[in-house]
Image 1: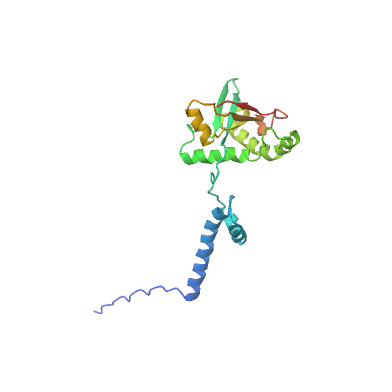
Image 2: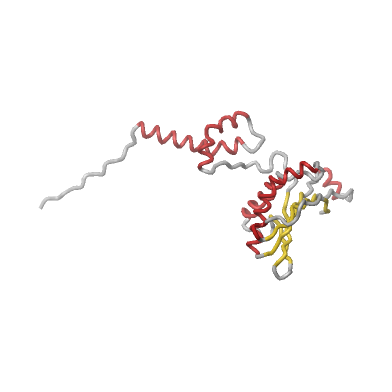
Length: 216
């Protein structure tokens, strides 16, 4: 009887060329992950912006264009969108985007907060000239129509009215004076965004009335 001893498996070995190729791929991918946060959103250095340029096709293809400096170095006032929906039976329903009570987990609240902030970036201040406010509608109204359409389909409403609130952000000195019984803080700014119907979330009102203010 002959005993057959299996030969030890041959250990895989990378060739120098394969090592170099894999290392280059890893370095490029790591750069594509790191550079978008360094290059944007502002403030960002000219060097970071220049280094990102050759990587933009890869960053776009892999959806790596993320920015993480949402609130720094100088956070501004926050924005939310309040909506009032008319149901088919004549009743009404109200809500807010984002909703601190309903949007859970916290990541969902943060994502919806970015929706209101994105829309707010296109809406001019209430004291802007009428022609500026009218021209800006082409930028923000398509986004608002998408939000209105989503709300109407989600809750089965007939029409929905939306408004954007810019929440007043007091400075530290003003907050201290308020806590010590001094002057009241400022007020929130409310900008109407229109009323939209169920069919394609088409606007029912035109133009949007001038913005006003509401106390917090």
